[in-house]
Image (cartoon, rainbow, N blue to C red):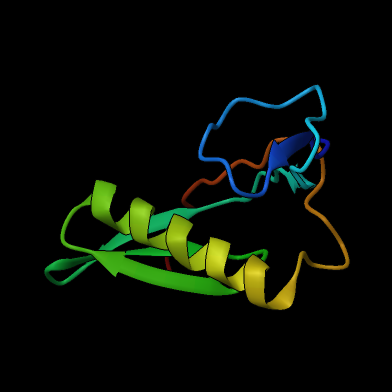
Length: 101
């Protein structure tokens, strides 16, 4: 998915994109990215991983694990910036494979 760009006021809390400039308000661009997430249950925890950013988090349930992973990914992007190679626009598919030996 291509990044979408929105102009948002720096001091505002309104999540809607701002299309007009108002005197005295600074604007910045907000980039939206789509990354893969894999959530697995390990013992009593759900572990969430983002392979593109190599970020991992956990939670007591799936919703908490996903929320915590989202926060960890936001902090990663805020600290390190986006990866040089962005995820492809095609959707990824996760599956399981059984192998007997």
